[in-house]
Length: 98
Image 1: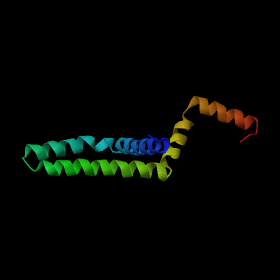
Image 2: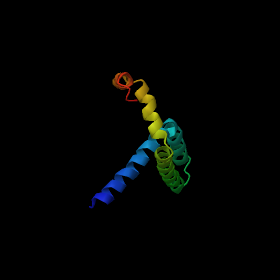
Image 3: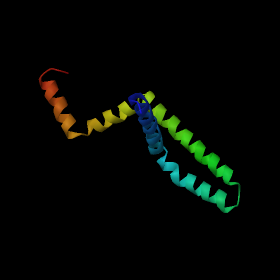
Image 4: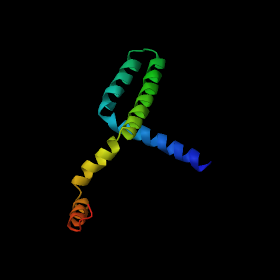
């Protein structure tokens, strides 16, 4: 496989992973809905549609998270509480680099 294809696949995987992280608060609700649909003997096709919709939702959510700059903001907030980053920023202020 070419590097470009591998890169694209890993980028899509990252979007889905980030989207799943963003929607992890709702996973239990989706699980309950899926079990309820199967328990009430409704069409399994509806459950497959819900799974496909969730997959698309996670991809779009992860894509938006990266492309609208939320990832950079999250890292910046984490860096404000990182002791190493605090020391580096203070050292750069002392040297008038920043």
